Length: 112
Length: 114
Image (cartoon, rainbow over all chains, first blue to last red; front, side):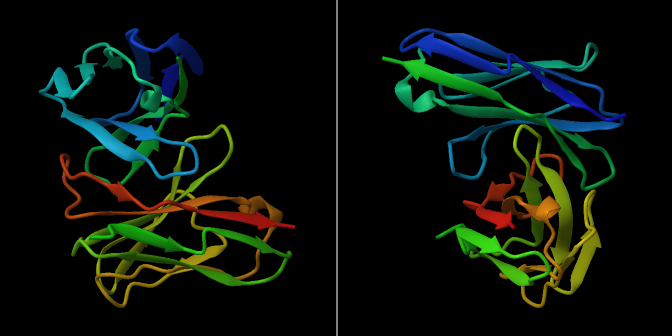
């Protein structure tokens, strides 16, 4: 069964600290893996997209990694800011289809 | 560019009522999608369209209908609302359907069926 699991479910950190969010997937055949940021009451916004051949992708203070062999990805946030408080969603697409498997997200809270 | 816009933002329906959720994009994107997001769950694809006049079912199409008469608009129709359709609905669009095409999401419509 195609699944995307994220951990932790929620996380609280102090402003300025770094954090890493995890994503494990069992999607096959794999096409690409995406990380989205979703602010409360808003639609998801794309942070990174990685295909099978890419193992790291950065977008400002956000760095995503992908290990296609172990089917794991992580999103590292550097020097967190209050505006980073949001849900972070990992999404894996199924090759040859328009199907995207969404994880349930990690809720991040950054405190001053 | 306004991006992807959705109306209404909120709606309460009674069981059995019908309504249309509107979605418009001004980026000249070919692909458009409708998702629903239930509390504590990942987004699920309801319907998608690869161009004007072409639509297809996603994972959870039952109880919904769509049409795509123009590139810009992709309305979602609920014919006989049921409590199970209480959810947040997101419309999204992308230029293509390729592995590196970014999906742009609207702000969502929060629907409650009582």
